[in-house]
Image: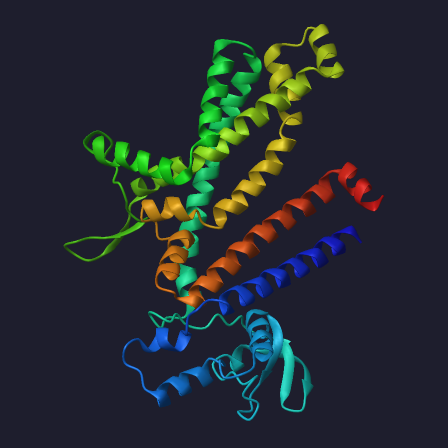
Length: 359
């Protein structure tokens, strides 16, 4: 029952995000038809495009069409007379469940439409951008977790020493450092000033094009600076989290008993303290990973990393509303579902959470 409540909550949250985006973008002082037409416009063509986009319909009809397009379950028709539900471009990919006259309800592809600027399908642009953001997010989390576990453990073991205080100072600096400033600083130092020594570029994508042969190749070096920059903030958050969690476990009675029995420090730390102190890290890391999957706009933009963040910035600059709406929605969707997944995992593995929810 608790799992169903969480899923129901997610459905309501997704609907809320979609409604908010619809209201927000309909309040913008822009005409999508003019954006598509540019300078070359005539009344007949404008009206044809407006009709094709459904902008000639009342606002409530546009809202319903918007929800129907974005949903994997929806209404569709193979009859052109039902212009509101007629979609000849994906009818072969539908699976009707219920039919009422010429209108069917069932499983259908999600329709994100085309970019106003390039005319490309929006799903294709997202398909190209999202894997790059995913790779960047995974590498960033590996760096942040690896370094934070080492530094947090050292800080807890060396508590109240100069090493502990130094780690805490660096952690505080990392938490207060703005991502945009950190990206510019790291790009300038390691990509420009120390370029001859590091061999790293100020900006570049994972997939590059050879200037002579025009063939594409993967350049993993371009991943180093953006991943390191993105790892600063989560690293700064994880270190004190691990430190404090380990100190709490070290002060428990069963750890003191283990010490009194003469167990070695390594055995106590690695077999008892460390596993017990990881729960807060898992919770925090899952939230940070969801945020990273959403695309780090500033960092991707500074390093010219062609992920979701860069895609959203470019669509905002060009007023490319279909790409912008889809990008923001997918970001919100990823964050919601990663959070749901973590909640469900906790419900399955932690009886205390399950009992609290049932209570």
